[in-house]
Length: 379
Image 1 (tube, rainbow, N blue to C red):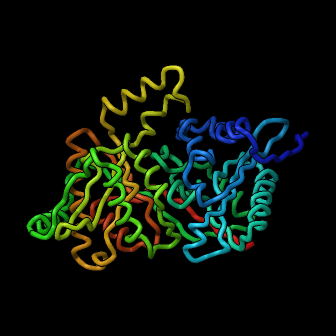
Image 2: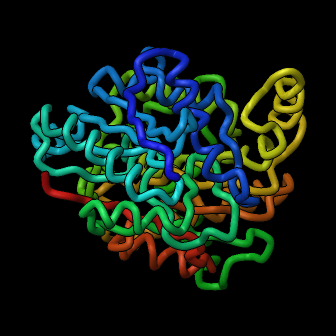
Image 3: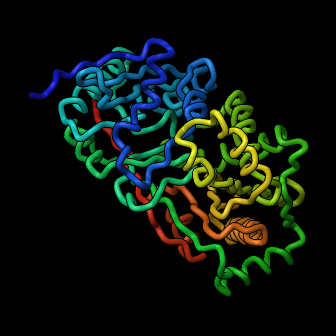
């Protein structure tokens, strides 16, 4: 006999811990799932820690059968996202569930009721918690582990979401790149031409002044991506949080800036894929995980890296100069990371309709190896 379903909102720290740990119920038998660090997940979902909540509010729910968690979801309203042009926009995220249609229906109903009460007329997601964090539901590429700051899912998740009336609004791609071969001759010629251009210069970020450099990077990012679907700008508090989060994951060779006539015009950030380093920690740094993690962060070099952020100022995007800047960044960071031991990279995510970026990545030998879907529903 099926046990009755109960649904409860997260109201205290014990609930939040259960919410964070709930995916263990889903992925216990999945060899490709990497348990996120509980500490890092608390930084995301704790409303006192994440600067996202300076302009947003959210509610979390856990579904249970017989006292055992079987699903979870979040609903959130972000004033920065609404201010970008759609005042009735709301989001869902953090959706994980056993293959239980009743539980999924109850979770989405609770999330939608909460969103309606806050003036939401259209919901998109999943975002955990914003489009600038974990985005989309994995619909293809279940056979490899997720890379850092990317999500994982079971193949039936899409059916559970779509059964609740959600439809695709965009797909986004994650690209895989073998770093060991050199780039094609055409790319090498473009990079060489860029180096001969006296108006172009490429440099490492100054790690001693990372707060200022992060502002430079995100000033370019906010301008470069402003015209893209779903764009939400980073604010000052989020910039400070990003600098704190990224500092252990980057080195000067993995974060570079192209200047045009001495003015920052393009950037690329590459981060260590720490998922390889936390795979054996089971979500906890205690009792000995701290020592292992510190050793891996500061005494070894990642064999896998990820490029989560790249941008070229709009005035250069449609011409050959913008492509030259992008290829220079990719080439230099590739060369320097390979010298230190990197062998594989994930680049993305990239919107399916971003023709320029998709074409550029194909030119350097990238292949799409994971697809994530963003859904929408009118309320």
